[in-house]
Structures are given as C-alpha cells and as structure tokens.
Amino acid sequence: MDRLPLVISTFCFLVAFAYTVFALRKGYYRPGRRSLVLIGTGFIFQTIFLHHRGEQIGHCPLTNLFEVLIFLCWSINLLYLVVGHTYRLSLLGAFTAPLVFVIQVVALITPFDTPAQIVTHPNPWAELHAALSVIAYGAFAMAGVAGVMYLVQERQLKTHHLHSLFFLMPPITTLAIANNRLLWAGFGILTAGLFAGIMVGAPVGWIKMGWGIGMWLVYLAIICARRLGPRRIALLSLGAFLLTFPILWGVHFFVEKARILAP
Amino acid sequence: MNVICLGISHRQAAVDVRERFAVPDATLNTVIGEMSALPGIAESVIVSTCNRVEFYAASENASAGLNTLQRFLEQRSGPVTPEFYLLDGQRAINHLFRVVSGLESMVIGETEILGQVKKSYAAAAEAKATARHLNKLFQRAFNVAKEVRTKTSITRGPVSVGSATVDLAERIFGSLSSCEAMVLGAGETSELTAKALLSRGVKSIFVSNRSYDRAAALAADLKGEAIPFEEWDQRLHEIDILISSTAAPHAIVTRENLAPVMHQRPQRPLFVIDLAVPRDVEAEVNDLEGVYLYDIDSLKAIAQQGIDVRRKEVVLCEQFIERHVCEFHAWLEAGRVGPPQALPENICTRPQS
Image (cartoon, rainbow over all chains, first blue to last red; front, side, top):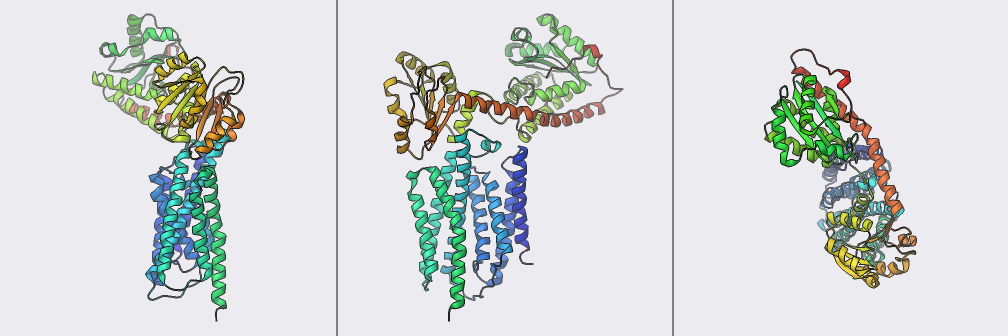
C-alpha cells in the first residue's frame, strides 16, 4: 500500500509520454501546460512516497537499489522542473517522461526493494553523500536527455529531413549549452557528494570507492573534452549515463554479495 | 440583424482592379462615415489591404443592404465588376473568420492579416461605425484566429526560400542577434536572403564580390562591410552564416577551406546557404562537424513541405471555424425579430477557394 503514490506517479509519467507521442503524431503538440501538469503531479506523488519511506526507515530513503532508482527519478524531475524552464527546454519533458517511467517500472517490478536495517542515529554526512550523489546522477541524466535532443536535432539538420518535431525543439546551440551546463552542475554536485563521503569517517569498501572515483573521473574527462565538439560531447554524456545503470547494478550486486559472505 | 460583406480579393481580381476600390488610410475615416450614413446600413467596417478590399456591414435587410453598398461603391469607384463577392449571414461570417485565420491569404496561414483586420476594426470602432453586432462579430473573429493559430499547425513551418533560411538559422543559433553573416556574390537572391536575416536581427554582414564596387554598394545597402574577393576566406572564422551566390563555374567553398576554420571553433556552428547554380559549395562540406549546408533545392523542398503541412491543416481549421460560425449565427438569430432572411440566389456568390 505504501507504494500507491509511486504507482500513481508512474501512471502520470506514462500518460505524459503517451500524450506527447499522440500529440506529436497528430501534429498539434504544444510544449507547455499539459505535460508540465502531468510531470508536476508525478513529482508530487514521488515526493509523497519518498517522504513516507523516509519516515518509515528513519533515514534518507537511499538504503537499497529500489530507493536509489526512485530518488534518481525524483532528482531528474526536480532538475527538469527547474532547468526545463530556465533554458526554455519545454520539450525536455517529452524526453524525460519516458525515461522516468521506464526507471520506475523497473524499480517496481524487480526485487530490489530489500528491507534495510533501521538506523536510529544516521550519520548526516553519509546521508548527504548519498543524496548529493544521486542528485548528481539526476543532472547527468538530464545532460544525457539534452544530448539525445541535440543528436535528434543535429541529424535532422544534416540530412535535411525536417519532421514536425524539428520546429518544436530548441536550437541546437541552446541544447549544446544546456548539455554542457548540466554536465558541470552534475560534476559539481558529485564532487560535493564525494567530499561529504570523505567526511563520513568510516571505512568504505573498495567497490564503492572505485565506482565513485571512477565515475567522477569519467565526467571530469567529458567536461574537459570540449574540443571534441558538441556532437561528441552529447554522445559521451548519453553513453556515460547509460553506463551508470549496469555499473550501479553491478556495484549493488557485489556489495550485497560481500555483505552476505562477510563473517 | 444581418451581417453582409461586399468584397474583392487577390483570388478573383488582379491588382489593377483591386487598387481601384482600395481605401487608403488617409481617407478611411471619411469613407467609413459615408458608409455608416447610408440608408439601411446600421454598422460598418472596411478592410482594405494590398490583397483585399472588403466592406462589412450590419443591416436589417441583407438584400437591400448589399444593393445599397453596391451603389455606394459604384458612385465612389466605378462599376462593381463580376469578381466581387456579395455575402450575407453565415457565408459572410464564415468568410471573415477565414480571412482573419489566414485561410484566404496568398500565403496560407500568414498572420499579418489579423493585425490588418484588427486595425481596420479599431478605425471603425473609433469612428463609432460599429455597435453591438459588428463588435461581437469582430471580437469573435479575433478569438477564432487565436484558436486556429494555437490549436493547429496552420502558421508553422517556412513557406518560401527566405523564410526557410531564417527558420533554419534560428533552429541552429536561437537568437540571431549575436550572429555575423557573409554574402559571397552580390546578386539579387543573396541580397534578399541577407535582408531576411537582417530583419531577424543578424548583428553584421560582410559582402564580398568579384567586383568590389558592387560589394561596396550592397554592403552600404545592408549597413555591412565590403571585403575584397581575394580576402573572403580569411574572414571565415568570424562568421556564423555564409550565403553564397556567385556566378563561378565551379565550387569556391571547399572542404579544404572550411576544415581548418571549423577545427579552431568546435563549439560554434556554421550555416552555409548555397543559392548558386552551378553550386558554389562542395557537397562534402556538409560532412564537417558543425557545418550545415543547404542548397537552393533543399531550401525549396523545405518551403514546399511547409506549404503542404499548411494545406493539410486547412481542413482542421475549417472545422473550428464552422463551429464558431454556427454559434455566432445562432446568437444573431436569437436576437432577430421575425423570420430569417435569405438573399436571392442570383446575387449571392461565394469567394472561390
């Protein structure tokens, strides 16, 4: 029953996605209120779910892979609601809705929601580290989405096959700037998250440490590679984000295995 | 009360006929005053643009009102030719709604006509030539135009080579206010394209031509800078948009020209418009990252695509208009005392679509 707000939220993203596809096919899609309302409603229900879960476990709800995925979706939406309008990237919602829908469905149907130990006095640095890290991946997800939009728009411009979507999407220059700034924002937040991790003061397993530092280095390399041009940066930001999921699952798998095998 | 319309447009009549009946701004108030004073004409609005001259009125008797208007026009400008359309009731309402929505325009879906009709209505309202019926009719017409524009794609997409160029530039750079352009070859086509870009705010324009004098003359006209033809490729790194339209028999903009320039500016795209036949720009240039090359055929194809989209949207627009016509006509009928009046078939003609 505690998952009901999450189910409602997932449904909102499905409707937002379906509406966008339908409206684009019919040719009367207008980026704006309807998808914003649906995504905003989905965000509210995500927040309600995370709030309840946090109260239940007495902890920031980032104790298992299920909660991490939902928190990631929440971060993506938060950034969309902030960034989407700042950069006039209203159509970003059309691209984030299916992403969030798929992640939430995967989270809901897979057995990732293993009960965590109730911690009575959680370490605030550890909570900050976890929350900032996931929000950083939300920013990287948005950078990946802006990258996809850039690649779609760039392909249409190169091939001269302009679909109805072409005139609704932002200029490629704006998309390249948004992609770059989201990468910088994500990198900054991830760095702050790593700093909070150092401040925890407890020993960290080499898998988690390797994952954290490895992804930090990957994104550092991407933001330092501006000379490669916006097309390659868009491809790299998309690739790096897609790489996050198998690595995240792998880290979770090995950490769990190590925990079970521990004497 | 009936709504009637007597008019002529680019669809039926050539410019020499239209200009005979046109009402210039300078005399608009006088003519509205004269029209309002006609017997049987309760309210009046005159829409006079380069493509149409239309006289709208509210009259108790549609047939008599149209006859009066016709005589008034004949006294003012000579015989009313067969190209004129005389409309009443739903047909007049439908016609006005189509006009403001851009469906009767030369370029389907253009929005300039809405501003022109608003101006005409404001002039009539200021001259106290409108009252309850035409006020309601024109307000409804403006709402219809807004609905059609926001709920359909009738205004979307370019419909000419010039608008395709400008739209593409805006899809690449967003605002053009920080963009610099270069015109290679001071021909008429490149001049028109450069002017279209300037009208959207391009920051500055360089002009280069084999004849420096022509380049200087066009640069002066465009408030730009003329550069000798031998130096155009040295200024490539400064520009965002290149318009080429020279009479050269072979390509003058090559991959070798552009590759080093693009290597120096990986974050800054270059939009290349090749309007020349034979082409001035090597097709391989489009393979360079950040370079978007469009020749005259691809621009024409994009414009044609826009026209086709708008034509398809007309059916959807007509559905919106039909609903509003029925509602407005029902409102008119509700306020009428006595049976509805119809015009004799022989004097009613519908504008050809």
